[in-house]
Length: 334
Image (cartoon, rainbow, N blue to C red; front, side):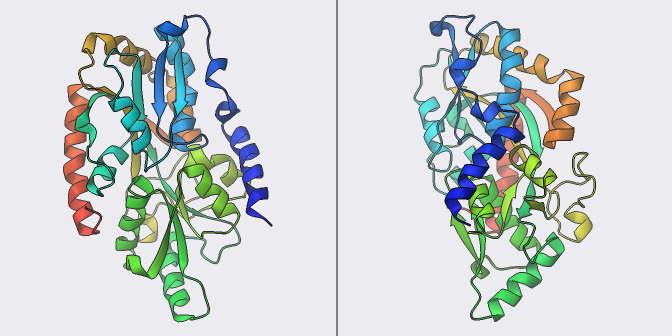
């Protein structure tokens, strides 16, 4: 079956999985405000990934609370640095923001980017998503506990291809796999890391069996898990997910890995706080809705965690030190 067919199928599946959000054009959002009053929210990843999916879910009610249009703009590429650079160079007028996560730190640690989160105003941490190593249902490996033995057996079979793992170089999934390999005592040289520009292209490659494994999550793959099109190997949290109650944690399988992707908002340096506070209030009010928070956890494996301005900056500083220590252990640093 050709990869082209899978890419066409993926587009359909993503539309179903996200309830059509990934197919929604930004100009289909509320037209109540003039274009000059719009806030542009740059997502440095392509449509269909978890960051895109989650922000498409919450941006409409946040926009309604704010009374201004929030227009999403996908700017993927260069390990999410292309979109980040666009926001970094934007005017500090409160009308351009970045929706990102710890890839800002990891791309700096890996040497892909020359700047980290300190090149922006940390505006608000909003949510944390539990990550899931994933394969296709027919793969020989169906649990995280089987991974290391499979890699070893492939290495011993001279006619077998290396185990292939999809990732976005310098991003959260790249770091996840290095952390995972260390936990299961597999050398990075024993597998082949294959770079992709975004999550959607990794999913297409996984469905087309170009790769063996990818780090996904419920926002990017929940519908495909439910339909049996993709298979979760375990969840990288200290407890099982309500949306995947039958899937054990990695720790239950003897793999000591906890890993979440922590998403928030950033503004260009110099953006006055008073221009950002109405936006943070709108997003915070949206996420503090109990029904939405429950849905995020059940359907998207995502937990609300709101930290604003100085609290978010302090959180990012702490995470940078933790990630730097781990990065040194797995030889991820520049």
